[in-house]
Picture (tube, protein in one colour):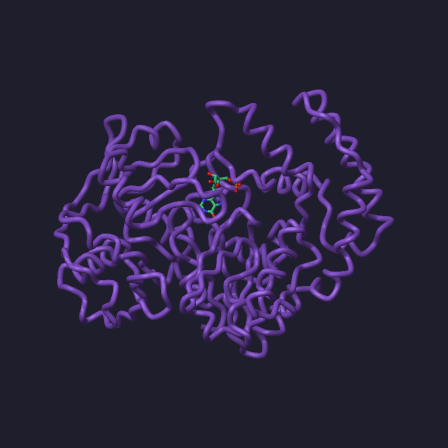
Length: 424
Ligand code: IMP
């Protein structure tokens, strides 16, 4: 393992939480490097289901140091609530470490996220309305307030004063909203300081020391490749870099430290929110995937759009992330379908595309070119070894492997840790 990056190879919701949880059995440090509480990780341990949005999945292993890196945006109220919930359920959150350079999500970010979406009308992105985009915008326009500012009330107030003046102009003059008062915000946020002090540190140094000790470090991406601000289906993306390169900037490590990159892909595909989706099944087959796969968002509860596995997008993901292997999840969901399809190319505007098209207009007009594969028609959720899978299921996995050009080493057939098969 030494330094492994785990990323979503599709539009998020691939089951990264479960795979990270399984891998973190051997990890010493698990690092989130981008995103905020827009991400939902569902992990099932025994009869217990944990839904985390900000704290890395590795927190469930008492030997792991969970780290929230500088590339994340942190809503401190959500973070504290998540730590309190974990503590109530017997999981010690005192090990959580947060970068002092991570930017904070402020109340005006949440408000702006909601009103900006409303103003976009038909063009709306379908964000999670957690303030993610506005928080990253402030980071890049250098108006952000960072975790470390909580511990210097003078600096915190002076930054807040400047930025809030600007936000209030925007809220009142552009978006026709009431202005926000500085006092309740300052009081609430400075009130978080004492509870967060012991958690906030130089996480880049912490990770560097762990790597140099030869510890196993796992970098956990949130969302997925096709939601990446640079490499996703812009503008229907999130505001950070979930791709593997994001791990370096978002954790404060160099690329030479990374030894492997695991892409998590669902055996079919889904997306929440707006945007192009070539293999979408807006029909009873897609409905059935939603029902059987339980495809409703962990964060917003929204119904996910579903479709057949997209081999073009998967190859793209292999390329932009430099994947060294794939973990294929939710294969059990496909047991309920007699005939299976995988897209190998797209037809769009009189051209055939085998590589993922970069132009929005091309992508919107894509008609997938499918290969058909036989289903296996039996429940595989209690199969405990890859070799015991029906031959059609093995064929499906090996077909995806061939198409992607990198090995599939992990196949998940259910939500529990036990339902994880290793492929030689
Ligand atoms: P934002 O990240 O809230 O700004 O939302 C931008 C887009 O990313 C929307 O389409 C969201 O539905 C999507 N998105 C954000 N987080 C996740 C996630 O964890 N899984 C899947 N989609 C997500």
